[in-house]
Image (cartoon, rainbow, N blue to C red):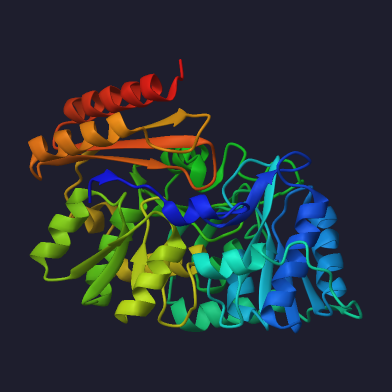
Length: 432
């Protein structure tokens, strides 16, 4: 659970990161690159039907057009669904599913996420095969179609598989000015909840800006100023969800996963190296086996399929419930959480999980690697902690950062450990 993550696979791939191809539009992400990704992915998949969705970024339509050109040049049929949450594209994927999105990143970013015909995220090997085709010309002759009511089909499926009677529930829903803006509040109302919608007016520039799962301050202040049972917040493309209890306290992905794991009675749950030690202690007490993967929801998904599990997730809010789905889905996760409360308050439900104090720091670096001296020091510190805490250092999969996490029973000790290791990263990487 502690130590250093090297990310050898990610270092081999040039364009694909933790979750698709991503960058700043006009700089590290260009129309030409997006067109090439569309063409290469379509060739890789066998030139069939490709469902295309996007989030609400202003750059979305232009990049959607570039992606479509690539699909058509490869001889595929681009089925355009317009603004559609990432999990909906996965669920409705045809021979291939492509999403123009940068997920939780700020508005100036965008990217492309890829799902195969089963709605599964690709393996590192699949992504390498697509990268090898980026410069390959296509035969042309493709076509363009419009998807018929993709949103309606998705909503009906999620309500059927994850919905429950929410009559009497007072909930604030932060849509991050993203792909769930015109969907999620209506779903909660359809199930009987009393809903206040926040950040549900996307204008192309405000996705994830001061709202959503990456910034819970607005949701917290709304909860504290009113009378609500809880609040939920999605990220821009809808594959993440975090919550806030009736007092405005943040409930993270580890806590949500713990509540759902106990309510669903699962025998196995998959998490990442970032998951709180308190979660591991609780699952051990309850006899639930925990499988730990590298950071990234696709690695959690791979573990669940390999081990035959149905529940997993990340502290950041990627919650995966595979009983009725194919990938992580913020709305499905929020509905599962509401059902798992079974009449309890959210604060009461999450109190079952002890939380170790965590301190985190992101260190900007020129070279995306963990220096050898840092590796040695992390090993020494973790041996000294002997299970009563830990330090984890890993390179980011989406940004030029080395991420440092320290965990201990006392917040002061976690902060000291994190600061010490982060300073060492800066020294060894030549960053001031």
